Length: 259
Image (cartoon, rainbow, N blue to C red; front, side):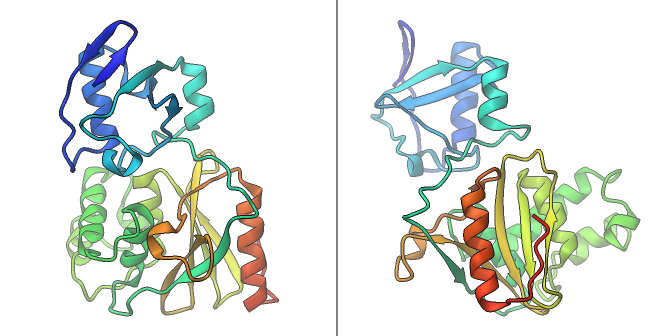
């Protein structure tokens, strides 16, 4: 049930419904711009990304949802310049950095991206390749031969080959697609590389050893299950970046940071 003032509308939310889809349904029912819709459940505002499943953030069929009308200024404060949701800054005492190792099967980068952006999933790195291929074809003027190192049409086919390694090109493309800064700690050259504009409101972290990619994230403890990992962060959360730096320096004392 969705309520906006005195108006109530009953809708069905199936297991595949994302927060973004739900916003569009609400927008159609109540004639509101999707980007100006705030969602509350039990008087608690839901801060979630559009690609998250509604069921994963506590929204089910019998849930009473109340709408908040955001004005454009509130939207800017909560969401930054990207279309994804606001991330609350972490409690510095409750989280520790942890490295999640990915399969070394020519798709380690795509495993990382799936883990980061699809609720810690490790099941289907190929669909990340498909997303990269599709976005490249949608924006041929951005993803040129100079950008990709090969013609757009050829690249979009080659990246679908499971034996093709991921690289900085795919990280840059995926940062654009997901509107999220991706910070890579390059252990081979002892420096970090940031992909994505500084105006983006969320970030995540990857480790590169020279021939392999792993995820670095925060967990409740070193023994906590992966489904409790925090993988996406507020880009202005200096506590997160401090924790990541300390972890990297513990393994690579000569590492040079640019952020």
